[in-house]
Length: 551
Image 1 (cartoon, rainbow, N blue to C red):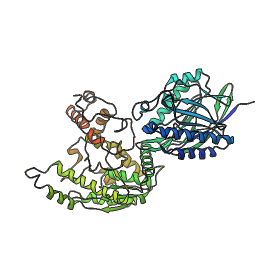
Image 2 (cartoon, helix red, strand yellow):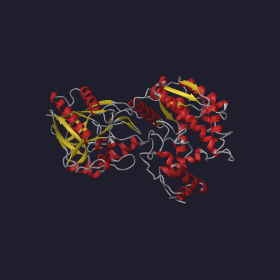
Image 3 (tube, one colour):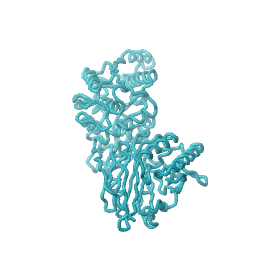
Image 4 (tube, rainbow, N blue to C red):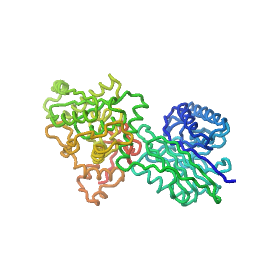
């Protein structure tokens, strides 16, 4: 008799902390799996990932246990067994586990061995490491379950192989990073297949959770390194995989191979999905943002429309006496192309009021950056007033280049609830804007044509807080600044190392100083979509008070 097995892969979203809602969703997807033998869900799907300190609350862990038993009871119907990720308390510590539910019972539990504690991950704060996992015997098949980080370590999968595992199933909560999908497939899972000779099911989730976005892109990799199933990125999907034992080895029948987004479409969709889930799950009716006529606000507005639809995006132009007619025209054209509401609220009455209010205490002092920042803060107060009055979340529009060097006004243009450009350097902003003007993102709800006039992309960037102001008055050109910042932030290089790459020493030393002294601003900035390997916030955690320099 030929041995066969049908495994359903549920690449789905989550809602952190919504235990009953997540359980209900898993049961709905299980019903879609029909007569599959087993359905697999992503890591910690029952509680949501990352749960952060929620799991330190005993009532949360208790409730998760109740929901796990409810899911187990559902398998009394003879339908698919379930591999469910959750949290379990044992002997005074917490474990990140996968539980096999079958026949109305919790048949087996396996604990995560390797706990990531770098970048966005903080699992050693929450969980205890489990022992090297033994395979789970499921209907005559030994399943090895390396949970997420476990698949990155060859000794974990080698142990599973030595203990008789025949198929490796890896439930994941792997956040999006640029070029990460290829690294998961070729850099990690291919290596484990070559080492063990076993096929791998790699299952990831989709959806946004605060700064993180999960891109899905799950796959099945055969023992011969053939990609047998490639699930889509960004979308929920259920795939039924058919397995048969041939010559002592388990073989998966090939299925659909979805093409994954190239760059920069993947970056754009990450922004769209991150913003969409953040706004919807926090129950905002929409977003409001300042539309200045510049490229950052234009791209932010385009992402917002693609995420939420034009009817949920409210743009506001707040001109001062330094605002050019070109900026007014470009903002109006952006709003027209996107189909959004645009209101104009001049800030000159408030600027004049502040000049009068502060005249006595500022007496004898020349006008300087203070007056420029007052304009920005007036705009922040104006937008927050609209947010408070109507409930829309304020979307900030600053990019990573500006945030790196402090070229942003705290309590001014930094005020708000979320930022889609927080991890996008200025040159990436240019690339994304050009791409969006010529393409429609797969997740987009916005127009099929251009979303901003070419003049927004081609004109020199300016904050327009004084006469004839240009960003390059204060900063190196962005094509020079961005690779310098990438070296300082993502690569943690010293001034000497960047000078060896051809950068000017005095310029690098100044930018390094600006990077460090702006830490206090970044600590007070809103969350934003993580795109690269070292975003400000979860990845890069520097002290605010810091005397170290590499010069």
